[in-house]
Amino acid sequence: MSATATVDALPAPYTFDPSTTALLVIDMQRDFLEPGGFGETLGNDVSQLRSAIAPTAALLAACRAARLPVIHTREGHLPDLSDCPPAKLTRGAPSRRIGDPGPNGRILVRGEYGHDIVDELAPAPGEPVIDKPGKGAFYATGLGDLLTSLGVRSLIVTGVTTEVCVHTTVREANDRGYECLVLSDCVGSYFPEFQRVGLQMIAAQGGIFGWVATSPAFIAVLQRTAALPQAA
Ligand code: C5J
Image (cartoon, rainbow, N blue to C red; front, side, top):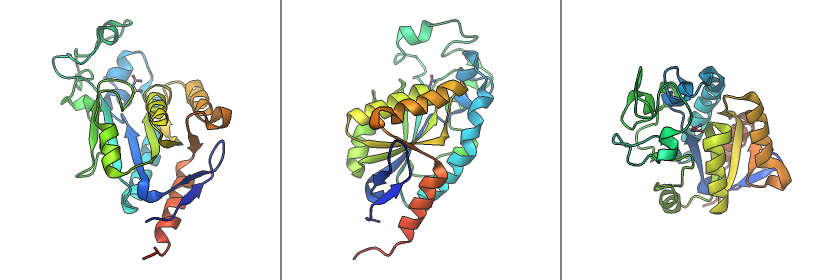
């Protein structure tokens, strides 16, 4: 694929070249989406995030069919917590702290069941999974080098939570020159008002750090573009 495509988006249509575009799925982990994990220890209603699963599954299928690179991320820490800053480890009064044992294994620790991605959105063989200690997917990871090696310039961004790891990553990506389209039905927040305002913030001020569209709109354009005859 090398034709450009345009999706209806806010604040303005989003034009991308599928041959330089990747899907980035942020932190769709049991620790955030299922009971007994990090999200719930902070007092959140984790059911709020589940609406993002089905549209993201459909999006994954469409991106795989169109041969867009798919990259997943997971937030979490080494078993000895040496990559977890004290400010993150000791903050607040959660019911369990990072590293404590929980029903899905140690909270937010790499290699534990709760740290992994939910079954519905499991990475396909060969899809990169970026483990990150922070909220942003570029901080202390190889994501930047991976995107450079793939020749990616545009990112379709989904995942949780809208106002934390999705926002941080989109801001980081924007500062690095990537054009980010956030799909509103494929991101989720524990707080409906943060979901609404978080999306508004991305597209405000002429698209201060990105664009916002729906996944059906994006998928329809991707499928139409993939079906076009390609120049030799
Ligand atoms: C949070 C995330 N909310 N993935 N992480 O702590 O948004």
